[in-house]
Image (cartoon, rainbow, N blue to C red; front, side, top):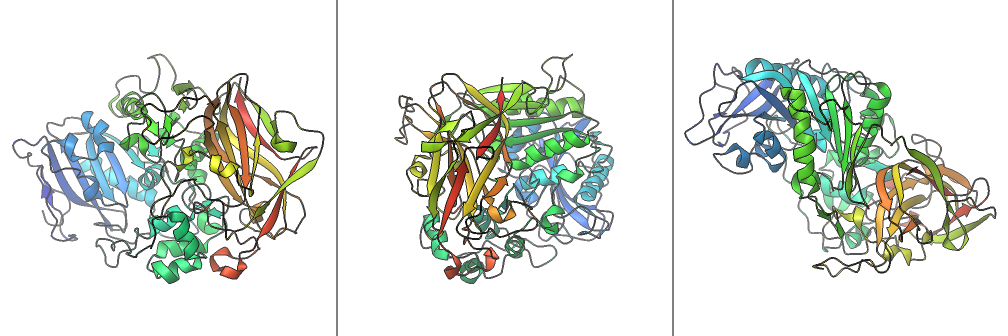
Length: 637
């Protein structure tokens, strides 16, 4: 069986990434005594002749078992090995435990151009079209892989599912496009649905600096075909404070000069495309979410610092364009991928009072695949004769799971929170007009957190952090309600509608929605971090907007200094209840560093900005009257 390594229940190092000979074994030998699974490596041919390295793990005694496929750029061999154990449950990654327990044939595949697979790798490869003139894309590779698996893996039942978290979630979503008839269930989890606007790289034109620098200093191209990618770039940061590191790095152009040395082509591509141009539009998945035939379960975390927008955007696109099988949105109180690696009972300083990850795995994820791949159970339905919910979401604030037959919920009404004088936030539009102003100095940017953020990235739980540090700064505007006399639940997207001006020709405007706890709110017990929760200002949702894209995300325009302009944009959904006695707060600022790159506050190409280009500006936020600044929200009634 040349061209593959067959491993009977143990992990063996492949002496080389074999390329020639037959790729289909004539039969499967039984696993070694004491092992409850069989593992084998194969090279699966695609329609253009390129072969993709695939690891297949079959439980002992499998009979009429479904196939569950994860396609990854992160090394399929490593994904398929957590421990050198004779037991499949211990050998495979924690995220696959629920599938092992269900008796699935688990398959892990290196995508085209990565690790053991042949071909050329392209970051978030576009669907066949103007920017992909070949006969293949991630959708055709998924199709061809599933076709091979159902025909060549013994003891499968002819049904396949796909899943994956983050980048593998992106590949799972691609499997929905012109899907294989055997593909019956797909769960894209935290998929990178729109890297150019909302996920990972850019948010409304603002570049997520820290996270992308950390990722692309380790995610590097390989030199050969195939071979392991190059090791992460090594350099001495000189500090463990991310704010200090990136401020000393200077403009984005210094990233290559000082550290990356143009060895990360993916970083170079990302920073060169600062507007939502054809490069990003071709990589967005939402336009292709139509005529989808498999059942779909989108999964995300309310506190996902990387790919929060992906599942929300793709769910809404599929709802708009139509699906022939049920589709459901699942959102929990998790960080990026936290539902597969954390208990889910706490995050940061927040306590959700339950093991939400276990609940998801046992009561949502596993039933979804059992029904659609085995034809058993009620799946996501509450009862056998019930309907599949459109949304199963965790309500933060009250800390409970909720099911809805529509998302946003049908019983929600549009309301607005208006900015008023003296820092007030009101449900009624103030008649009196005015403005509030604040200074913005990109050389002294507002920190993303009030704590030292170690390393070169962002803390994974920063979206839960206390914002009291920012409320006291002169370069942050703060508006808040009086203490609430009843619970207020916001369900769905948040839409800032701002009327602003700047003394510069470009500026960022960051909007943060915050839950202010009462002063007598109890501290955790035990209080390991010595945090004081009385008056805690919990970040509920925050998003930046780069002002030059206020009229068109693809065509930036300068501000006329001092001229008021309208900015309106989408912030990802929430399901959060502000409890009675709490206050609702909104903060406005023009830097959020190093989460977001610094805006020079001049209209120019930021990746090529020089240190002297970064100038102070005075920002104004206009309130009151017919076009005063406000936040539009959906309130559950």
